[in-house]
Length: 104
Image (cartoon, rainbow, N blue to C red; front, top):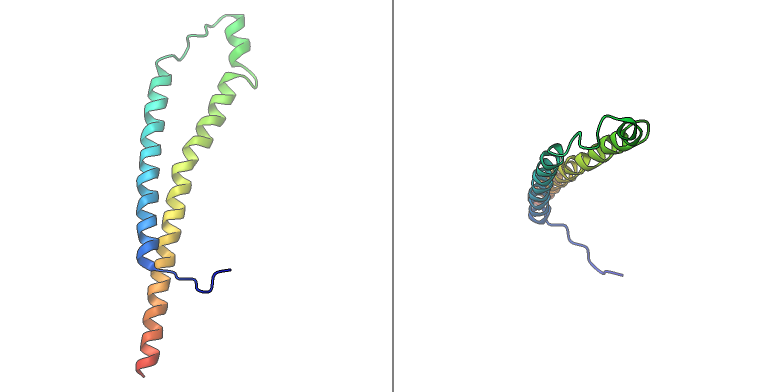
């Protein structure tokens, strides 16, 4: 077990920035993926096979669910980033208050 745990606000902010970068890259990759996939939209056909493949719980429903799940990841990374920044601000405020307590 660790004898000392350290929390450095600068490290929290650095990690938050890294998460912002990753979230932006993931969003960019998803945008490229959806654009590439759009080029193949409708290739299955409109006949009975195409309707069976796409309908119900088929391709269209799966695509919608996959897109929603994938697009939630950059948002999740953003929320983690915001949480780390908020924690860093609170740590800094607590440290400031502690320093003031010693000065009085």
